Image (tube, rainbow, N blue to C red; front, side, top):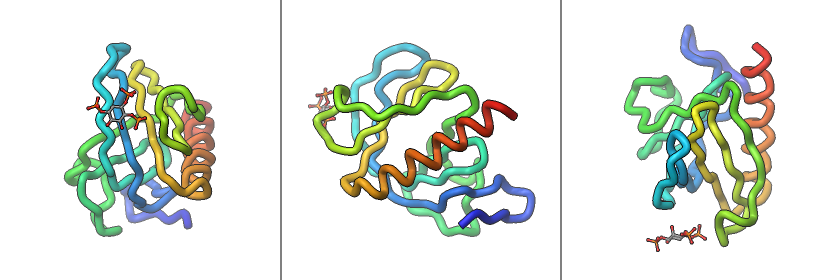
Amino acid sequence: NVFSTGGEPLVQLKGEHLNVAKISEGGKKQRKNWTLMWTVLTSDQLLFYKERQQETSQKPGNKTDVVLPLCGGVIEWTTEKSSRKNVFQITTNTGSEYLLQTDSYSTASKWFDAIRKTIDSSTKA
Ligand code: I3S
């Protein structure tokens, strides 16, 4: 379901609610605080919104609460950083670390695969 919305970033994966916890910012450890965020994957960024977005307003700058650049990032599954299941970690090229989690393995792996592909393609670009 890849679609382009007229000059806005190509949306690879439409919004879905995922649990998100930032555990490090710029290499500095943060207190873990899981938050349910509406998550959108574009061609080179992951966007987190506190509130569910309409498809027409899925663009950066429009009440985007967190923009996570994926170029140069690393994604890996982790069983050590949380007791929750289906947790994967994204490390940005500036050394920020985010955990993402959802109880559905198929949802988690769908996001994992899509983000990994996006990291690969935006890093090569
Ligand atoms: O890695 P931690 O510190 O065990 O993570 C837990 C804490 O973030 C905890 O909050 P408090 O530090 O306020 O107690 C959360 O409630 C837990 O969910 C965290 O552990 P999990 O295993 O859920 O990531």
